[in-house]
Length: 100
Image 1 (cartoon, rainbow, N blue to C red):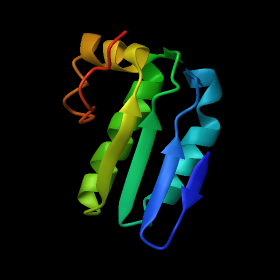
Image 2 (image 1 turned 180 degrees about the vertical axis):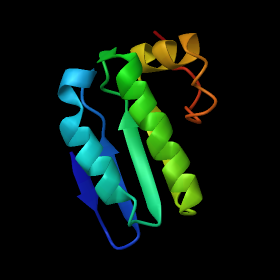
Image 3 (image 1 turned 30 degrees about the vertical axis):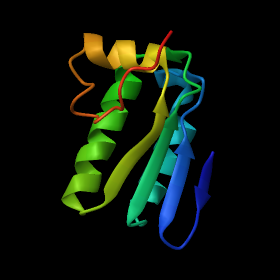
Image 4 (image 1 turned 180 degrees about the horizontal axis):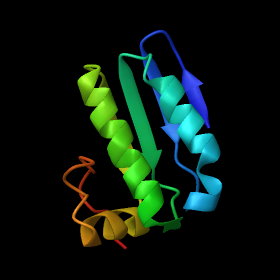
């Protein structure tokens, strides 16, 4: 779910973040690109697949092209582990891995 203010958009990444369920997330991310500051909260993610991580990478790159600031409010262990296994944790600028 996305919440917007004049200066910031916050997006909560769903617990089940896999290709079959990321349509709504895609819409939220696309809409957030109008905001100067975007905060992603991945702390509730239990499942994530490669396609969902690719979506986040494309979003991160598009945000950089548009000079948008993207920060993370949190990233769950499953999100962090999946991104790390695919070599994407640094590209996504994930925060430090939380304790299990």
